[in-house]
Length: 121
Length: 106
Image: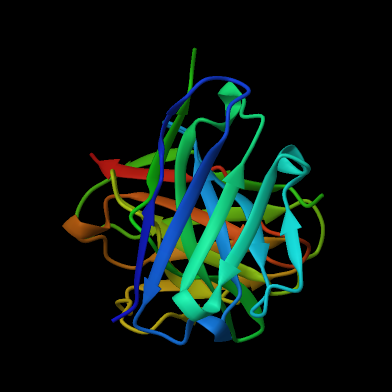
């Protein structure tokens, strides 16, 4: 069974930093692109970043470029998101998601339970 | 950037009803369109890949059609467990989700 377990969320002041982790199990972690997707309270879903299987390519939504860094450790089946210069608008539940390419379309086949990040004074 | 819209933003329906949700892309995305279901307090779950391919384990009452810019998700006979919010997501250029359609009980 695929499992993704996020951790590291919490309350942080504007301008502060936070590091999220995602522990993966039940599949060959190093064979999949991985992503972070967030959801602000009461709002929709927003893709944040993704990382290639070997970590050689990383992509970000414009609003977090230069502030967030995605990384992975395939030996430890773990995904990370380093978030710096946090803003109130970064407040959201952050989901770790496994990338899946199916029938010609790339989607998010498995999701963790999410970890809540609150940016507030 | 590719923008996604959904209609309606919400709908009320009864068990057994046929429900159709529309998703539109701001430019052609071929069939690079997926659908998700999300229940309150839970993570999303993928239902359909590539506009019309049902994910394993998803009930056959769910179906998807479309290509280019216009897509639909249909639930042929709404069941109590289907009351949720549904999102479309494109993967043609980056990744963008639609704003969601909330399906609640009439």
